[in-house]
Image (tube, rainbow, N blue to C red; front, side, top):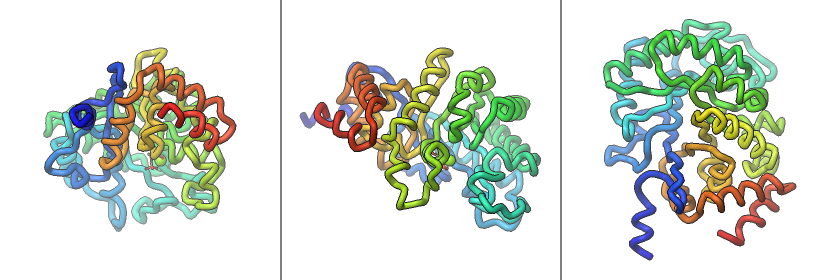
Length: 310
Ligand code: PEP
Ligand code: MG
């Protein structure tokens, strides 16, 4: 038993019957990549906000290049999915000069900031492309809060013009999930941000403690949207991952794999338990779990139906 534990506590993510599932890291800076190395296959979500927060002025191009190159060099296997700036009046940045909003979560945030300050995104994409050249990495780049196919196409055009080879979008808004198939005509991959996708699907502020039951990632309506995105990805052979908190729940991870997602991205401490959980389930068991969870009327029922086989 001890030997089996060791064999599943490191290495690439896979089910007991060897179906691969990339286990990736959510990070905010190079400092989150421990010097001794983290046992993951790359970075699935590099939140770039850290460079911008608490700043009076926009960080310069050179400073951005250095920060991104440091992450590209330190990442396991050199694989990094960079998320462009996710700011707005919910995460206010004085230098953006955005107007005050009564409803910031529904306002100018994420990719929408580029409607009013397109040069901020352009500089960031320039810096990512230059950091890639300097470090020899081939980062994937995605935008937060993509809502329409037109936005996805515009973002992809700007990223590809700079030589960025893999361009994607976060799926955080139900409108995007409903159009996943069309989005994937413009993009190379999707990454589902379940924190915001829950917030917008259940009309429940993600910080609102009293609404935790609605924000539970075992909610079937959320899982249905994930299933639709994963099916769209499978139909065209493009990666669709999950990078929100849902990916860090070891039992829910089996459900997500059963729904067809190709990667799970989480903070480093969550990786070993998710890896062990996948290694203890076959792909068929993951699909059974997915079917049960999709059929449940509430998260408690979903967990109860799946746990006996756990
Ligand atoms: C998400 O919304 O699920 C996500 C991963 O992005 P963030 O938590 O940074 O909004
Ligand atoms: Mg988000």
